[in-house]
Image (cartoon, rainbow, N blue to C red):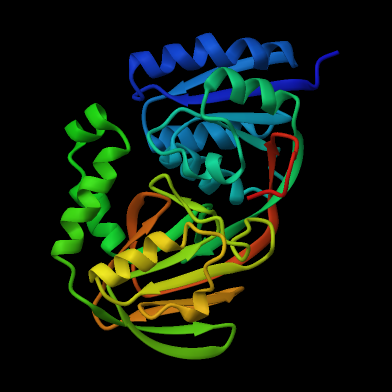
Length: 303
C-alpha cells in the first residue's frame, strides 16, 4: 500500500545532465513505489524553484527536494513562509549535501530514496534571519570569502575539494574584525575572522559531532574563530572529535541561544547555507520544530 497519496519531486534543471539522470534513474522508482501519484517538476532558477515549492505545497502531502545545499535552502525559504507546509525530504544530489549528512541520509541516491520512503517524520528547527530563513548555518568572515572565491570550474571538476582549496586561500588573507553579540539578552564583545551560527552539524562536508549541536533542540550554536593561526585551525578541526570540551579552547569561543543579534563595525556579507545575499547587522531567532522532514528511521540518536 502506498505510503503517500500525492508526492512531488522538485529538482534543479541546471544541475547537470548526469546528476538529473541519476536522480531519475535511481531515486524515482522508490518514490513512485511509495506514492499513489508522483509529480516531477524541473525548474531553471532559484526564483522558479521557490514558486514551484509553494505551489506544490498546496496539493502535495510530501515534497522530495533533489539537489544540494543551495536547493534545500531555497525550499526552506519557500516553505517557511507558509502557515502549514507539508513535510519535505532531501534527495542529496549536490556537492556537499551538508544537511543531509546531519540527518543521516545516505549520499547514495538509491539508498537514500529507499531509506526515506521507509522513514519517519521528524520536526526540525529553522533559523529565522532578517526576515528570511536558514536550515544549516549562517556565517560571516572567512566562510563568505571561501564561498566567493570558489572557482565554478574547479567546483564542477573537483567537487567538495574545491571548498577546501578556497578556504585555505581565504585563511591566508584573513583580517580579524570586531563583532558585538547579544545572545538571549546578554551582550558579548568578540574579535575574530569567522562567526558561525549553526543549526546543522556539517559545513563543507566537515562534520561536528558535538552533543550541543542538534537541529531539533530549540537552540542555535554560535562559534567565533578568533584568529586564522595554525593553532586556531587545529582547534577548528578538533571540533570534529566528540570528546572536545569547547570551554577549554583558546582560539574559539562557543555560545548557545535562541535569540542572537550580530553587529559589526563594517557591513559584512553573510553566508546562509552556502548562499550569499544578506549583510550584517543580523537578527536571528530559532523556530523550534517548525519544519516537518522525512528522515531515515533512527538506529541511533539524530546527529
